[in-house]
Image (tube, rainbow, N blue to C red; front, top):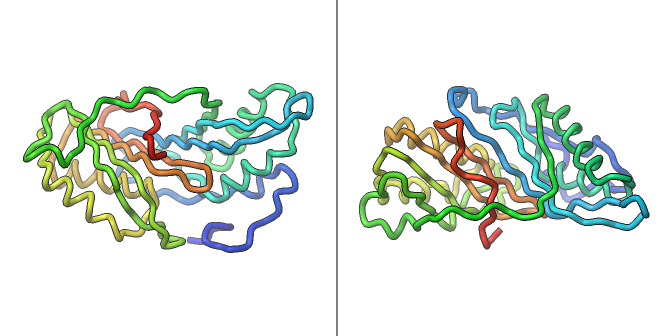
Length: 243
């Protein structure tokens, strides 16, 4: 897999807005065609000029379908968003629309973008380690300190994993063992969540399942993939304290 900028020390100059900074990464999730989900990308360093040439800095939410053929490469997105710093917009909504259009064209999939004024409330959850044997049905279990390795830079990624099943008792010890097994695994956030999801569906025989990864930000962006057996997703875009 070749990428433009990830893992390279030299970066291009962000002199002006350009889509040339953007790069995509093919997904490998054909085995998930019958399931549902999306990826929330929260970017906290989106800056541009307003109608009076005053600099504005905002946080934006980028929502990408899990069924897009490709997803955006995170460092290229950071560079792309950084190239807006000297671009003027009479109406802020035009800035969000431009980002949405550029990403939709890159990924050949409908991408939505909006300003983040506030996050949804976090769901009530319990640490998996506090369940002695089984996670009760319809309870949100949280695993803190999830660790995986970026397959390009070999740097660690950290996050919290939220798991919910409406109808299945989850073996907490087996679940912790599974999640700890990724600590030295090289894969992207989305692929880790999909692997956990498929393992729970196939090997653990869990149904009515949702897995949500809340990863810590890198480069001013956090990535939060949701994978579910249900079209109606129970989790919204909330923020963990550590993010």
